[in-house]
Length: 241
Image 1 (cartoon, one colour):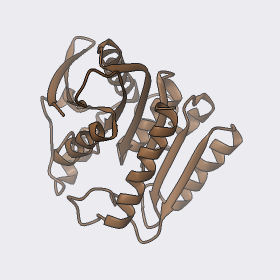
Image 2: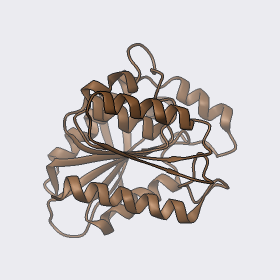
Image 3: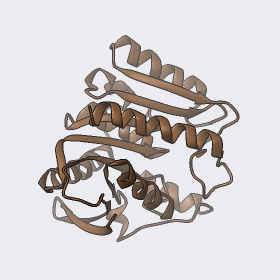
Image 4: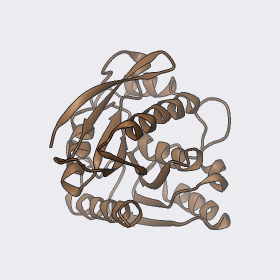
């Protein structure tokens, strides 16, 4: 299962992406994996690297590429992480994702009409945003996407764009999370119901933010494994059918 870094052009700037593909000619469906606030670190690379075993091409774009190549921060470096996050805009995020989609669709081993997206923390928020703006996305999985009720830069928040969603969304949350709180999750669910969108939400008791990340003290193994199984099942249903 080959893994590599690939540079993509985004409006004249270089964005590095981490690519993992199954053995064989394919074509395979693909899943975009969106980073947490620490960048495309070892955990995100690990998650991306799990996908080929499930029959998917995995790709993770380094959304902080405007901060410098391979911009990463340690889990303890919250101030630096939030500074990088504060300079991220939805306009730039969507430009980055469009570049990733165009690249995937150019690859002969990718099934170009079967592209999904998942993300963790801010990446979950971005998955929701993508489902509202990018019709090429056919399934989305939101792992505890914080800040979904606010816009990055000008425009509407992801939740305010719920009416535009074109992909089924799976949401995986922790009941003890502070961002999104259970109240935030309920607000998002109200919008999805109001607009008759296809979705499924699961909230895990005893889990806070980041419960899926096995490199952090917030990790909850049993819930993380169950959530990952649900995510793969979601993609199998909508990308392999």
